Image 1 (cartoon, rainbow, N blue to C red):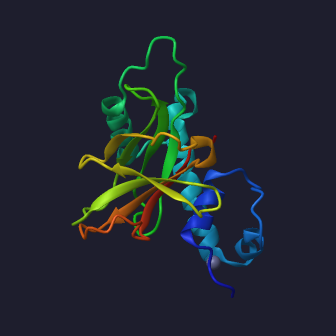
Image 2: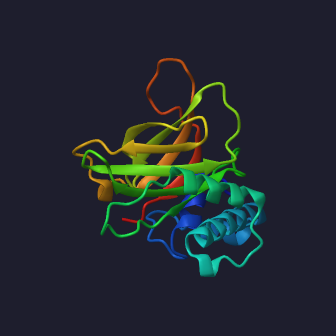
Length: 198
Ligand SMILES: [Zn+2]
């Protein structure tokens, strides 16, 4: 049995189209032979489908768990009125990665109050932490991470994208659990992953 798919690969498969143009060995080869990874991917796809259902009322047909009612409530709190004439922003799902796989939420961008763009998150189900949760933008190659800031204790955030950072080149959203150790680098412990779809 080859190595199991890692959380990054599973999240990308769940968030992306059925046949993403991922370079390298096809994850499908492993999925065909590994029930464990198929089960995990099925769980993530269910989460994504449910999360997307929140943003499209007429697609919300499956029984909403209390988790997603909570997400919707937080969305209402986190969502400031859009400027007149601005198009509604599409909220994208955030998928919980093991061991935070019961966590979830949504992410979208909007114009910031002082110009530039804001990245707006509403999460729920993250485990209690002695540290904090940090939000990052990443390129699709996972080579470059841009730190945006920290989630509020209630699991929401509205963070300004740094000037000069091309959101289209950094379409992945990552939430990591960080320690209060003074080290601003990514801890390597990603708990949520999303895709702005730019
Ligand atoms: Zn596997």
